[in-house]
Amino acid sequence: MKKNIIIIGANGRISKHLVDLLKENEKYQLTLFSRNTKEVAEQAPEANIIQGDALDSEQLDAAIKGQDIVFVNVDGPMNKFAGLIVTSMNKNNVKRLIFTTSLGIYKEIPGKFGEWNEAIIGQDLVRYREAADIIEASDLDYTVVRPSWLTDNDEVDFETTQKGESFIGTEVSRKAVAAYIRDIIESGKDVRSSVGVNKPGVYGDKPSFIDFNI
Image (tube, rainbow, N blue to C red):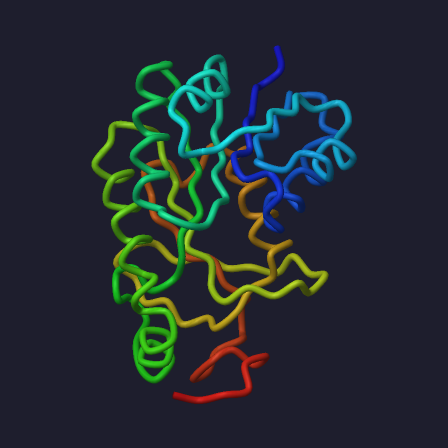
């Protein structure tokens, strides 16, 4: 029997890499949920395509019903997205949630890199932390994914850290984050975990592709 996977925010760049990694696997039936569906339909013509708004509870309920895994890659009012998705999953008896947030939500980055990250995106981290708190307070089988600063490099190198451990890697490719998500879908690991994802060996005071300091 195929496993039903919905990708909410299917136009996101991490999502697109994940679709490429999953769409040829006969074990999975993909549902791609996005406000704009033209590109996702072209990318995965065999998938179920749903044009919708993740802030619309009725649309979410209809899309999430019957799914086995919900992957979320959205931007905006993260706390509202998280609350609506958790509510919809509970209503539809769907347990497995993988939700992307950001590094730094627990102030887990030590040293100058942590100071730099907080100065650049500290205000945005409030909504990401609120989203994580909502998810972690649920009884879902969740994984909160906390990527480092994202690149479009064609590479899949990654290492992970768990909540409570220091986050020191300054960057990671979107393709590598998608590879990690594919791995946890297939292995079932990191359930009820909040996981940092970064490129191994790339440490410093800020990402290498950023040319300004605080």
